[in-house]
Length: 128
Image 1 (spheres, rainbow, N blue to C red):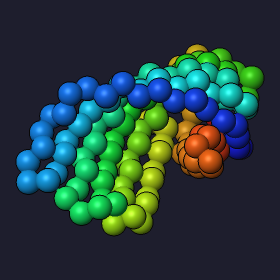
Image 2 (cartoon, helix red, strand yellow):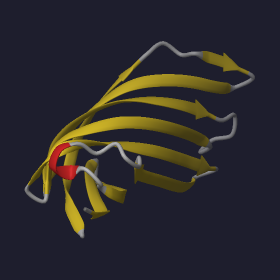
Image 3 (cartoon, rainbow, N blue to C red):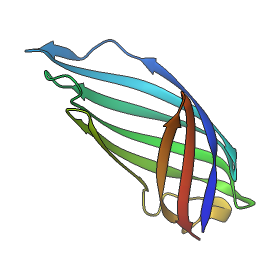
Image 4 (cartoon, rainbow, N blue to C red):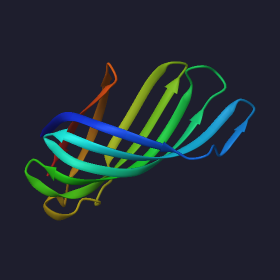
């Protein structure tokens, strides 16, 4: 099954962890509001590293999503792994196994994010 829609995101950056040799480590708290086939909110934490070369960076994040998916109420956790290698991007987002609750118990899946003209869109491929 697939769920599609848009989301709003807010990041609260925490003080930089380190900035040695041109490499910056950081952390942030994130909040999202999902619209469309996933009507939900989320809260999470993100760790990032910005490399010494322009366009090189990485981040990992964990976020708990709570709301309705396909008409079913519950929550689940998403795990992010993103990289930029001198501008070439890769992003992997998956539902953490056995984190879904309520009517979403047993949820498995992965999410794709697209940013178009500053607006965020998701596509969640999932099994219930």
